[in-house]
Image 1 (cartoon, rainbow, N blue to C red):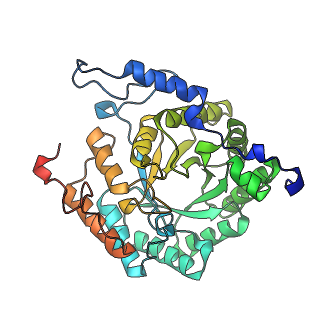
Image 2 (image 1 turned 180 degrees about the horizontal axis):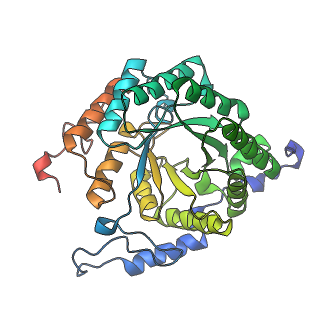
Length: 364
């Protein structure tokens, strides 16, 4: 293993790859324009259309495939500079509210971040188990054995299985700043995956900034994850950069590469941010393009402009037929619990819980 020396670094190598402008994205955009139903289109036509080849889409509506939702509020959400790290009792209240709106998976946090983060992760894992909440558990770690071992300690103390979501930067910008070479990336993935396997925990490789990472780097990371026995992969739009064609191109690329590695059944997560105001639409497109699990946070909180908004994601997926519809009052209760926990006001124009939101009987 070696790091690239500062003297050998080429600033041009730090230029981000743009999946929005990739040839596959341009083809996807053209396909969207071609296939979009016009004003006289057949009523009830599924949109996006049924998958047709590598760049196609999956349908919403009656033919929709189910998709899981992972709540990142207590991990990525509380990294927002204006967000309060909730008291333990508030975290417990919020976890129950997650179960109340049908969230499938909760991220317990980053146990290696410090004693309080570790203890809160243990507390929440025990609460989910003792209250028999229908929530699967994940926790974050860097691709470092010590971080993964902290997740394993939480799992052991709580008597629960926790999927390790180990993240590593995949874009040229991060590699330039850190001086990381390809061999360092591969060894880091292998180290983290081995630590998870030693603890008997499933492993997910989280490719940070995947929407600005070149295919060769992603291909290397995918192979390292598959070789190390990963249970799933997570593609991140860390800077809220990607558009619909970019989502389609990146997910199609990931599916092709996994199939070539003999891992076509490996499940894919989508984790998006909202820097360009595209977080919710990108998450919906990820579902349409075949993501198995999408991440979001309550009230869309998080770093900078925040993450994809969870309650809006669940509401829209219910309307589109990809999940069971959730009554508005439950979504409002979830928003209220999140607001109390995070010390973050619900905006008056919030489409579901805001003071100016349309009454339920007027909503389509």
